[in-house]
Image 1 (cartoon, one colour):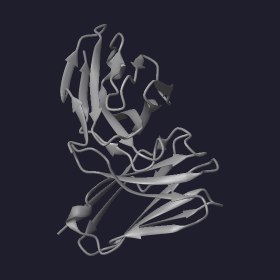
Image 2 (cartoon, helix red, strand yellow):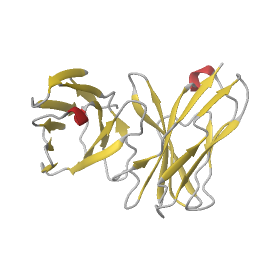
Image 3 (cartoon, helix red, strand yellow):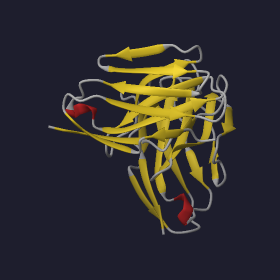
Length: 113
Length: 110
């Protein structure tokens, strides 16, 4: 099993550009989440999904969209990148509840100039 | 309402013990502990549900004081591999969105 995979590993965007961060898991987990990690602030929840077709907002959803068409994939879309979105983004999945024993992907380091 | 972790950083020698605290001003349903090594993804350590239970595996254990809304992570006889940043995450009710603390950086030296 590959676990949770994320692409790309690194990305540089200009302000106003859009892009999609990819996340996939092969563990048949129902629950998936997106976090951003900024220095000194720990992890903050952006969006989460409790199953295919069902998503909800977390603590910091503004500027991001998600969809979940399959159990395996949970892409995160940045609509119009801003320097404040410079961060490391982690995708996570879990089996029995949204936050129980989450498996994290390796992360995407995004810089917006 | 981000939980508050203390200390922010701690340096140990191999074999020494450490305690990391996580506290909240709100009533909690659960506390989750993760460890993240530099440049890597966080890795799940354990979860504690309200009820004051204590958990542990190997030489890392944790407790949850429901009345004080505080959890403590205990690392005994620390090893070099324990180095990393430890995060606590808290839920205020079942499946309520997770909030993580800012982390405690633990460095274990030979």
